[in-house]
Figure 1 (tube, rainbow, N blue to C red):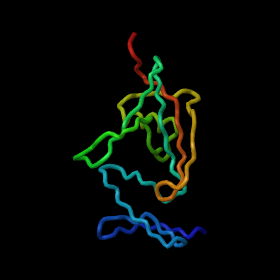
Figure 2: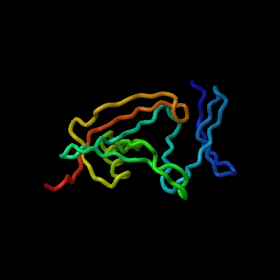
Figure 3: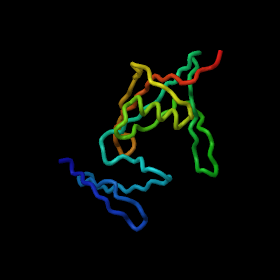
Figure 4: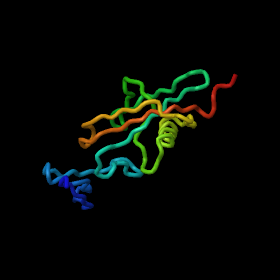
Length: 146
């Protein structure tokens, strides 16, 4: 027993109890601030992230910049990155990559047959959990006209 317990209590400030860890004597509260589905995973040991390496028929690579800051003063991040995010429950790696690229760019893609190019495993991230991150090779459905 790791001393963890789950609770579904709501506090007066509209925070939910995410989990309780008796061993560490901690209670983690959460509140999803965006509209739509709450994407904070239940108490777990890992989160799984995915990114799409989208390569056109002309060997052009799709990169994005994330927006940072409050909605009233958003600025692009200085670094370019592959479009990606967290895998949804029940999704395959390829499905998650295709969905994340579409959500971030509006570009529809298909996964290659052997699409996983690389992955890494990092520790000590959000909520002190580990991160498994996969990069899949994708091809855009519409390439440049000749």
